[in-house]
Amino acid sequence: MKIKHITEIAGALLMARWRQTLIAAIGVTFGISLFITLLGFMEGLNKMLDGLVTNRTPHIRLYNDIRPSQFQPIDLYEPYQNYYHFIRSIKPANAKKEIYDAEQIILQLNKDRRVLGTAPKVTAQVFYNLGNIDLNGTINGVDVEQEAKLFFFKDYITEGNYYELKMVSNSIILGKGAAEKMIAKVGDIITITTTEREQFPLKVVGIFQSGIAELDKVQSYASLSTTQKLLGKNGNYISDIQIKLNDMTQAPVIAREYEKLFRTNAEDIQTANAQFETGSSVRSVISYAVGITLLIVAGFGIYNILNMLIYEKMDTIAILKATGFAGTDVKKIFIAISMTIGLSGAAGGVLFGFLLSKIIDAIPFNPTSLPTVTTYPIDYGLQYYAIAVSFALATTYFAGWFPARKASKIDPVVIIRGK
Image 1 (tube, rainbow, N blue to C red):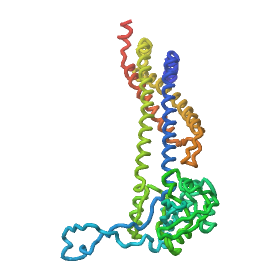
Image 2: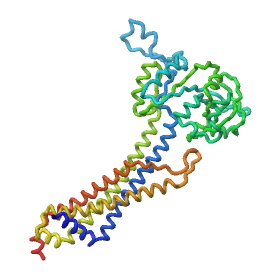
Image 3: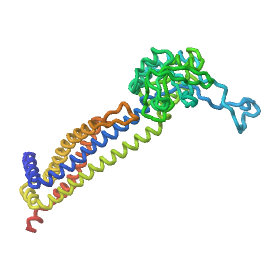
Image 4: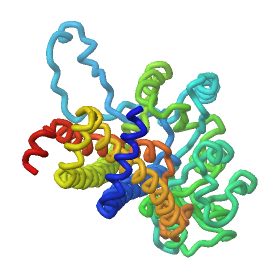
């Protein structure tokens, strides 16, 4: 029975100070809309920057690293096995960069349900010949179809067709920086020199831009067969096996498993790109901190308005309690006022946050180093809206609870006697 009266009284008190109520609701709206927009923009930016690495980086990379031998002859000599050995100038082990029995390893990996796909790779250090000048370069020999499927290869080709790398023998896709240095265009023939001082003519069938300028100055792509030919190796020669997982977070654990199983070195993406994850985490923390601060500030605005309302409506509160309303009823009235402000502000904040995100998403953004980006990045994750609304309602509830608690303890006799 009292619910109807409580609702009517709360509405009347809201309308009695509608200007202050409107300002409080606008404060909540402003806080939520900026929270949603800021988080959406920062997470979109994080995904864009991380995508520069994660799109082109395997979750696990199998390779043979050149390292000094872990065991020296003295370690095998029984009389000295219980001693510490200090050996200087240890030379790397005479190991090949080739992965032994790579085809069988790939077949076994593709049977693992945790693996999304694999892509073999051969790396060749070369010199790009520019007249009498030799420029350092790296040619990545790839399986074109797997590279496009797993690593979004075609999205980074700014000129030419990536598939011609497979169809045209002795062809190459140059990094944009390298192409600009050599003034090379699609259809041109360039000459490269291997570390064995053998020269090969290659036809440029495309220009590649990764978004990392320093890499694009030296990096280029060719088919597996072309790169193996440059190195003078047979068709079974593979120096790297790139692995994409269904769940990237499992990469460190699976990498250690594969390292023992296949007796090769295994590098996971978290280890290889730890600095990028750190940057993303810091940006996210800052965004959440700023957004939550805005909502807390809006909560203090509601607290102050309700406090002033209580002091102005002492007579009303005294009359309510004198006519049979309990302290809990009075508390419900002021909490209802607070939650009404919170709900209306939350609704407006969600709407304006979405519209503001749409506006930013439509602003042209064409950085020269990011060919696939045309507008500012925005992430429309529902979790930002849910967090903003939940935190705003919690803030406004507590902003109303403390004044409501004070109002519920007002003694009507003292107020009426004072009048």
